[in-house]
Image (cartoon, rainbow, N blue to C red):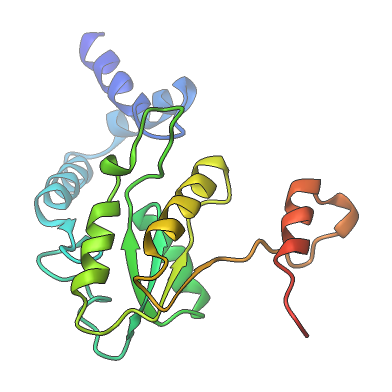
Length: 197
Ligand SMILES: [Zn+2]
């Protein structure tokens, strides 16, 4: 069936969806009522129409500045740099951070041919230069993989001297974890990033 195959092909483009799962999703839509299907389509269309990027931090925003950039109670002298908009959600859930964010939309990856110009690095530098509140600290919270590390070192070089200090998030040992089950890379990094008690 051509139309069913087309739906399955479209669903397979979703991240993490394999052929079996795409078939299950397609079966759901075949069984769903007209109303349920229309609600789904409407949600997709409106999210594409309404959700844009915040012009300051490049997080998702429904028109103009995002809620975090426009919140006067947040510390505007702190910027936490992340790779993806979803990372903000994760950090906000910790309730441990009250500064602003900057979303790079990716990491620098020489292997995949992604240079600094293809992520929002120039925008970060311009932002730091033009900030009304002097930036006391930029916290680099890119992923702890080779691309994230490359990006962190690159940004630290560019930002040094422009802001009070540049820091990198710590590499922790998982809470409730067992030291002897941890991989040596994580354990090595957590030793390097140890803090004084
Ligand atoms: Zn923003």
